[in-house]
Image 1 (cartoon, rainbow, N blue to C red):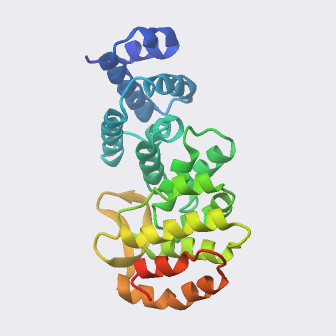
Image 2: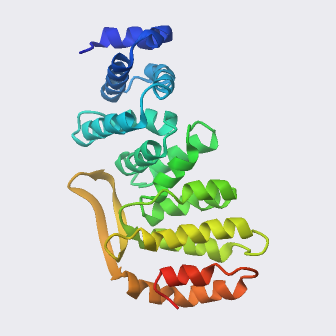
Image 3: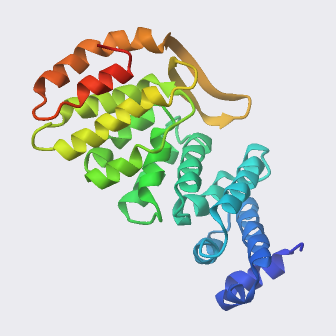
Length: 278
């Protein structure tokens, strides 16, 4: 089912038409509408496209939406679509895998403004602050997954304002590399918490910190910087790297200090064990 621009606009201009489409038709027209917006950057399409996408997520399985997202980002990477084509996935998709991945890709692919590498991240934080995201925690998590200290530095106040339940959702977002910036992000968060007054959040952040070591696939800690905007051939600069055991040794004293402040059932000794520390 190929669609021309006129047919796409007919659905966008008449939301009731989307209600009459079967799932296959809805899938095709939504992809086509995202593609149209990606190539034209027409601001008049934004509100209509978001309305269509919000209906789309109620009927199309997340696995299919992930596949469609991959198609959209591939077009961006190939230079056939603008990075703004990812915004419907960032803003309107409630599924964590879709929203977090789209957020990560958006902040590293968005054009830098006056050599400011955090332009895309600042845009998404503005949307978060305005309550314009279907899954704001996944978007925060996607930005954490960049592993870039410049982006992570923007997230501190937002993440430290989260409730325990929200932190437990955030820590499920993890990148493919174990990075120095993410380790420091969680470790500094632990150091700033009052383990007595904020015991539930302390436990959640500690779990997130432990998960970093558990989720390491190659046993390496990387100090990285994202190339922004990224290209398929130039995405990450690796500044330094250590084995997990080597890096763990450098933070052992900080974890011991946190452990000494604990009251009640101790958590940090178990976290240290997971990191290979006694």
